[in-house]
Image 1 (cartoon, rainbow, N blue to C red):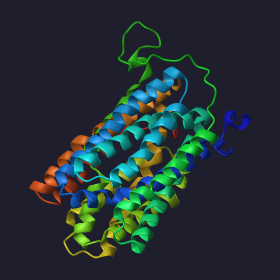
Image 2: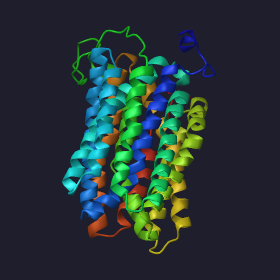
Image 3: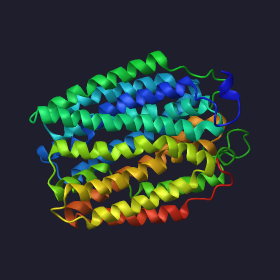
Image 4: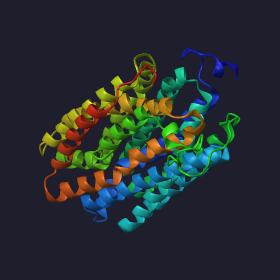
Length: 407
């Protein structure tokens, strides 16, 4: 494919990037159709905020550990697509399992299955995108992928909203409906995504540990200091970035929202990123990734401070304003963070190092969400949000400066 090799960010994106974007659209349509009401279902089953934090933290940490090894395994095998297929398939199966749950440990199992799927697919999918794109296109490629992903995240809650409006007591049935687009995404991945032929020597399954004296096996050679500093900043942010379920619970309790209005709120929140994510990715190709990430983390701090100050009895408009601001944070950071990780990674070990990036992002999810739940239950409902705001500012201070616009 000639246009994949020609320099310049104006060349058309490869078909594989577009196909993966639509796979993510369908998968997120399925996931976001039900994710905003997971907390509602857990509350119905008697789970406190600390249990919700435990479930979400374990789920996201499981995904992140698997992302590290799935990326490494895809480097070893020289194949990304089979792992992505398995990951998307497991995520699809989790939806009806949650809908059928009668006690919260069953939801824990289904969420772990869902996030196992996410862990298996994340790094290989991102490596598939990076493999077929030159460096000058990656911001645009990840921006397009994120925009399509988020378009699904807009459509999913809207489908859920209209379904619950028509079926007020059909909350559990919504999980069965969500299975269909997830299955369609698996079929699209199987039929439409083509891998770039592997031309590099497969790497070891072992995670790089920096054994001196062995060429191409030294962690010091593979992971440079800027990437280490970047991972440190991302790690600090991850330790305070608790599950979005706490934002939804805070909004639902503060504004007395029904489940369908929670879905509508989440759709409007995702709409911000769906509209602006691709443009933000292109902008990062021109001005660099760091300015967008710093700005996004500061917007996150402002948003969380707003949730900390949100009084009981707030109107829908106040909650909506905070969620739209939170959507701006997502827009500025999600594509740029992945693109910066891809820029800094060793091309011969990109799957493994993108997996390491995902590991750092997700390992903080368990302590972040568990601590948020404990603070919410035992200190105050505002405490988790003040912690998040302070941690985001600290992470922005640690983010290393880039040496070039696309590095």
